[in-house]
Length: 223
Image 1 (cartoon, rainbow, N blue to C red):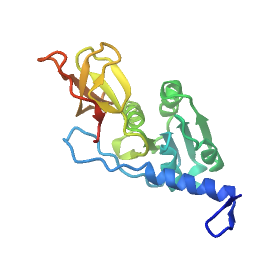
Image 2 (image 1 turned 135 degrees about the horizontal axis):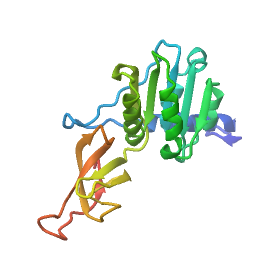
Image 3 (image 1 turned 180 degrees about the vertical axis):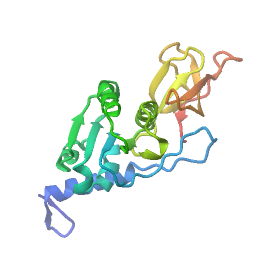
Image 4 (image 1 turned 90 degrees about the vertical axis):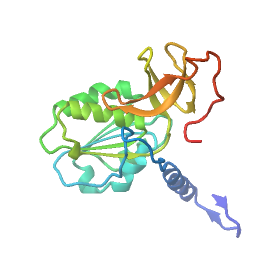
């Protein structure tokens, strides 16, 4: 029990519930206007259908919790990658038809592909969490023949980006600063808003190509 201002103790379960609500609220981010190639993420809504696939990472679980209803979850296959967040038990408590918790997206990829390969007509796909997760999962769904109209997205949590170096073609995950150092070739790269849906990655271009060593100070991508 924890005492409040008036001396009355609050149950620990209420404290934990409030923390989850605050986390869910704080995980929402309003992206600034940008160029046309930059993805625009939406909001999840429960849809009619016999089969539902929900893929989320970290705070993306909160978006699933927001639309969860017993009838929907009884027909849903949930694939969740915690990435340090603590929503797995809450998702299990929804009693989905199937639930899988994976240590990473790459470790979950074969399961995602199998579910999409075995999908019935009319499958509804829900993607929630980071841009990296949504972009990669969307590419898999589209490649499997799922129409765009059957795929919903909602960003929650980290704004870190999945970046491709246009020089060496290497992918650097979870980039939070601009400029950043390519994890493959070591070049200092400028974080651009140009986005490749095929690669599910933003593009990074050498920032000091014409004046080697003249690299601006790092700052947060959205600062």
